[in-house]
Length: 402
Image 1: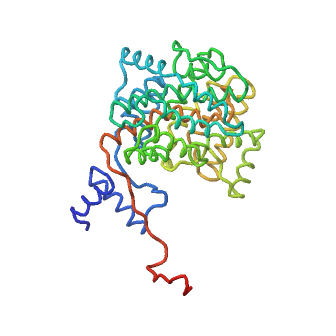
Image 2: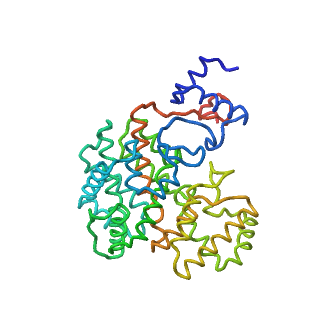
Image 3: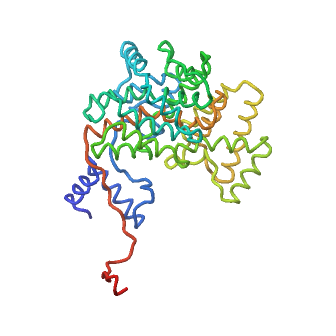
C-alpha cells in the first residue's frame, strides 16, 4: 500500500493537484512493470479545457454540437475565455482579430527570401518565432499579456500562411477583409476570391475539429515550454515543430497519398492487404486514445465530406475512402481518425497537400494558447524522471590506462 505522504509527494513532483490521479499513474506503471512507452495512458496533469472522456468535449461542449452549430471564432473565444461569447462579445472578438491580422513588412520580406524548397510548415515555424521580436509584449508572461499575444497570433497566422503560399507562386498578396468570417477571410487570403458559403462553412467546421484535443503531443510540448516561464511565442513555436511530425499533424498530408494510390473502390481491399503484408502504416487510421470507439471528429466530418462532394471525382473519392475504411476495419480493426476525412475536405476546397498541416496550425493556435494560459496560471515546472536502462555504476579508467 502506498502511504498518503508518498502519494502527496508524487503529486507535487508531477505537478498534479489531485493525489488520486497519482494513484492512477502508479497503478498503471506497476501493472506494466515499467513506465508506459510514450507516456501511453498516463495522466500527467489536469486541464479544464478539453477531455476525450465520452467523446470529445471542449469546455464541456460536445464537439459534434460545436461543429454543427458554432463558428470557429466562437470556439476560439470559448477556449481562450472559458465560456461561449454573447453577440456583443463575439463582435468585439472578431473586431480584435481583424485588427490583429497584420504582419510587419520585415516578416513578409523574410517569407519572400526563404528558399523555395522550404516547406510551408518550416516557413511558418520560423515566421511565428520571428513575430515575437515585433510583439509589443515579447517577454511578458502575465495573464493579460499572454491572452493579448494569443489573440494577435490567432489573427496573424492565417496571414503568414497565405503570404508564403502566394509569394512562392509569384502572386500578389491579398489584404484581410474584416467583413468576412475567420474561415471566409482565410479562404480569401489564400485564393484571392470571395468564398462561397458552402466552402466557408466547410473550412470553418474543419477548424473547429482541429481546435483542441486535451494533452496531445504538440499541446503538451507547448505546456512544457510554458512551465519553464517562457513566453507564448516560444511555446507555440515549439508546438508547431511537434505538429510537423508525420506521426502527429503531418499525417494529414500523407492521407491524400493513400487515397490517390487507389484508383477505384474495387481495388481498396487489395491495397490494404498489401500494405499490411509490407507492414506499412496507413495514415489516417488509428488513434492513441480512440482505440475502442470512433473518433467523433472523423464521424461528423465524414458526413460533411458527403455533403460537400458535388463532382464525379469527389463522389468517387468518397467511395474509395469508404472502401478503404471497410477494408481497414476488416483486416486490422482500425477506425479512421480526424485526418482521414479532413484530407478529402481540404482537397475538395482546392488546397495543396502541403497546406494541410499549416491549416491545422491555424485551428490549434487557440487550443495551444488556452493551454499555455492555463499552465501559466497554476504553474509548476514539468520535469519528469526517466527509467534508466544503461550500465550500472562503473569505475572510471584514466586515458593512459585504457
